[in-house]
Image (cartoon, rainbow, N blue to C red; front, side, top):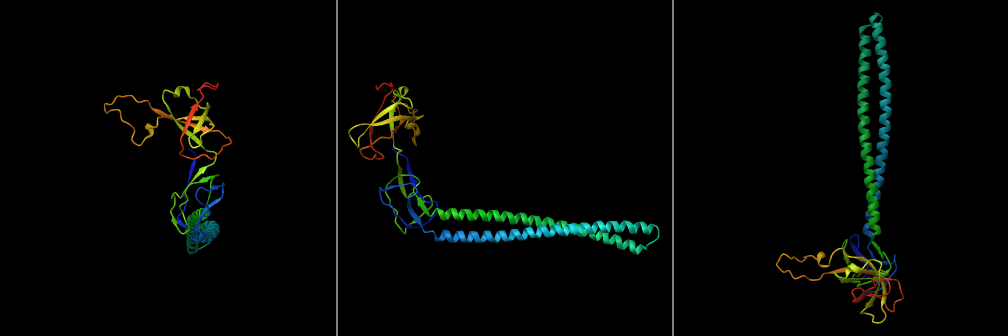
Length: 290
């Protein structure tokens, strides 16, 4: 076995270019296929235009807040002056220096300026709310631009690692869907053997112990390997329908547990193939015994 990467698109579109073929060895970053980028380029331009509009609206909202602040400051200064003038007129009225009409006029001016301050503050609050909404709209538009840019980059699918392709059935003109499996890629230098040892043999096996692997596909000298890990459960335990012993069948069957054997780097006479059969011998003595 080996690490197999299932190549699939992250966007839906029409395939424009497939420069690879069945069973071809590819390098990391090499282009495997390209999806028509034009619809995604248009979507990106639209998203960027919306972002530009949102920024303009944000700038207008910022200007409105600054103007509202200036109006509030002006109204508050007028109120202070009107209150001071009303107190002065009230003292003069008690001394019978000014008329009742002059006092009423000063009080009315003061009350009017106070009302103007309340209105200006309400307008400032509304301007701030619009400013917050405009800034949030910019964030949303910026996110849409980043997503559109990401979708555009997804139209070019490259090999995520060095490896050998399986069957490449996709052809230019085909419409592919997001997450649709297109081709397998077997990663280089990731081969291992899944050896099913009997449960009675597991107590002697430890991770790190050396192993020899005889591959049926290539008879001759064995390959060198090392125990990488031991499964925490038998193969049947992970089955879709695990066996049920409540049927009355009490015949004890020796179970087998998958043991992963990592194939060490070495010069090979021929490339390994996923799915081949092998015989594994683990050295549990540390002295060349088995």
